[in-house]
Length: 94
Image (cartoon, one colour):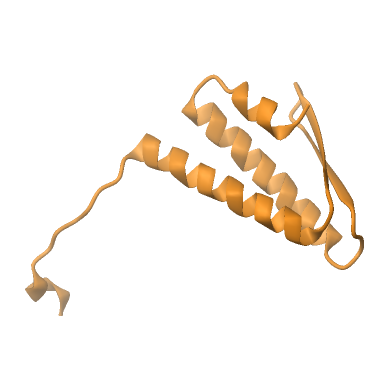
């Protein structure tokens, strides 16, 4: 199984968010172990129900994947929490 199928199998936004956070955490832990050690690296994630195994060619490609997942995570958080703006008078800024 790969990450795409794992994320698509989520039942809702909160479940999807937790799955993306699990992937990010696994990638970050593996990236720390990989830096400077190898050109090709593999990581696996096992949440008790599903096992994911993915192969990356370098620590840089892992970093790009982490950034992509972080963007998706932020998008999901915006959907869950909404976006807002606070307007304050300029006198209160001093």
